[in-house]
Image (cartoon, rainbow, N blue to C red; front, side, top):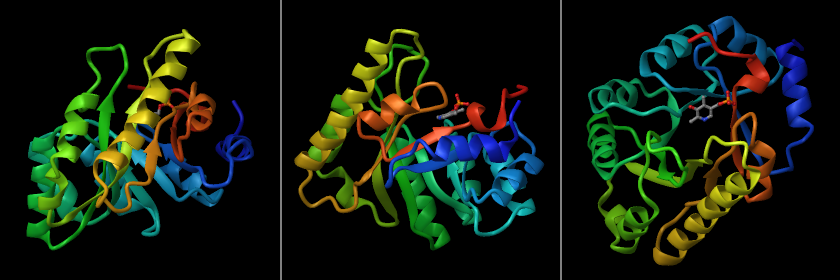
Length: 224
Ligand SMILES: *Cc1c(COP(=O)(O)O)cnc(C)c1O
């Protein structure tokens, strides 16, 4: 197993200018995050609220924490109110979006979020259906948000060895982002396309991703 620093360097050397790397540190200890931090990494992804808050309290304040897991409604106040999360990538329903907005206003913060779209074959993956998302933006539903900035789209490809399917999923996400921008001409700053994980991020970048979320290829296997 190469060191975390060596793995980070190897991945970074493959990233085109303008593609941001989020190091997915979920289920790995704070020491592993500190090692990546020492190697210059500043953006980290976590999938559980308590784990993110515990690590944020123990680690340097200039880390940009991304929340990438399914966010339960009963955890929104805690996450948003903490003020430590830089980007909530996994907003998977309008109900969750409205709740984040209400809690952000209450806490006096502006939350930056991505909307998560579901295009993958698996039924278990969370996210808006593409038509649902297009409908939301075409009807101007985002205009009533008071304390939330939607910065773009997040998604995952199907979990399959069929590269054609993975390529098609990433293409579908990229064209959904373009369709949203076209449907909502007054939408500002909808720039981020977050897609690609350890095994498929080069395909995601080829399809237009400008943010990739890589865990295993940096930190090794997770102990769940
Ligand atoms: C765990 C996770 C990743 C990272 O997956 P790896 O295969 O370890 O790179 C990326 N995105 C999301 C949403 C995840 O939950």
